Structures are given as C-alpha cells and as structure tokens.
Amino acid sequence: MRIDFLDENELKARFIISDANIALINSLRRAMKNLVPSIAVDYVDFYLNTSYLYDENLAHRIGLIPIKTDLDKFNMPDKCVCEGEGCPNCQISFRLNIEGRRTVYSGDFTSDDPEIAPVYDNIPVIELYEGQQLMIEAVARLGTGKEHAKFQPVSVCGYRIVPEITIDAGRCTNCGDCIDSCARNVLEEQNEKVIVRDNMECTMCMECVKICHDRAISVEETGDFLFTVESVGTLPVRTIIKKGLEILKEKAEEMNSILEL
Image (cartoon, rainbow, N blue to C red; front, side, top):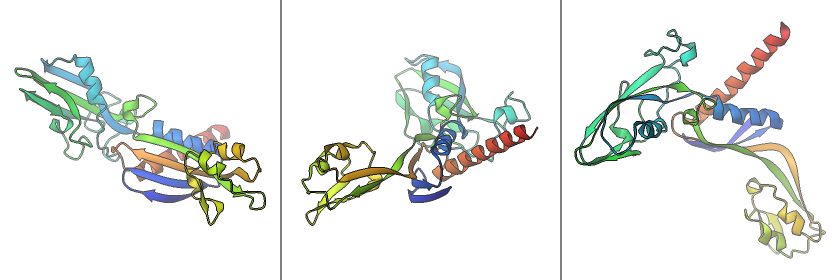
C-alpha cells in the first residue's frame, strides 16, 4: 500500500492510496471514524442550574464540544490502573460557575489542565438571563466513536475510486453533450476537442458515458482511492490517520496470534 498526499493541513487532508483492495480501504475509514480515541465529556455534575434548559439538554450540548486530546497523557478507562473508576490518568474535569445575563461559551470552562481545553472558545452553550446561574463540573475521558458519536475525531472521513477517463478521438464528434451532462465539470473543451480537466473530481456517475451517442467515452476503475479526512480539531489529521493504521495493524496481529493457537 502506498499513500500520496495531495494537500494537507492540521485539520484536513486529501491523499491517494494505491496498491490496496477496497476491503482494507474501508477498514481504514472505519478505524479512523470509530476506533481512534479522543476526549469528550462523559458526564456532568450539576450543582446549580436555574436556566431554562433541563440538565439533560445541557449535558448533551456540553458532550458535543470538541476537546483537544493528548493520547500520551491519558489511558482508556478499561486499560487504566483504576479499572474504570476514574483517576487523573484517564479523566479530566472542567468547571463552570457563571451568573447573570450573558451567553455561556465553551471558552468559559476552566480545565484542570490548560493544554486539554475546548478546541474552539466561541461555541455557544446556553444564554443565561437576569438572576439565572449555572454551576457545574463536567468530567471528560477518552472514548471511541463506536461507543458514542461525540468521541469521533473526524467530521468527514470518506473515499472514492479514482477513475481513468478515456476519450476516443476517432469516435468523438465534439458535440459537447458530455460536458453539459457532467455536474462536477470533469470535462471541458480545448482547441475544439473534449478533454479531461480533472479526473479526481469524477464520481463515476456515468452520465457522460450514457449521453455519448458515439460511444467515445469510457470510465474505468484504476485501483487507486481518493481519501478525504477532516478532523474536528481534537487531534491533528495526520495523527488520526497514523493511529487508524496502527489499530488495524494491532488487530491483524491479534488475528494471527489467534490462528496460531
């Protein structure tokens, strides 16, 4: 398997995976989405809530706030020495005590660790009115997407097949119908000829093939896959990819050890 990055920043990456079958590609997608751990609020202790929202509604909102994650600092609860009872090695607390007429934002939470804080400070949580007060403690821990969507480190994680588009110049009459039928603007006219502008944008809908009366266009699979991954900010996108690959490797090694018994 070979990975070639097309573009990348801390939150988004587009890359091509070659020399791999679709089962492995889909396994990587599922691993990044459901098996790579990240930190999210697990439960909230309400000491005082005189707002217009029920405790359950507020807890749900707070749980969806993305939190910066350091996988080297925390253990998964089931692999911690406390055996899931809760300790500084597997969980962290966020405190909030606000009163008066104002909007409460994610940046108003005080963390036990300044480096483990909400990714964005401007996420609105609730609007308090005169005389209302909110005093809470939110406890966060590591979890995975297969447990709850709030632990997913990605907002977008998908792939599509990279096609090979061939235009037979001998058959093509340059009528332009294929260009008009393509919603992704994959084809264009240049020097009175229909050419492929960008095959990466092709979704293999086959509309150009269907509309071409001269049968001059063919769209075939190449065996390459275009991956798009966007992080919610809890982890850098490259860390998510590497961790997903490591998890797949661990599972394969575990399966080998089982078969050898």
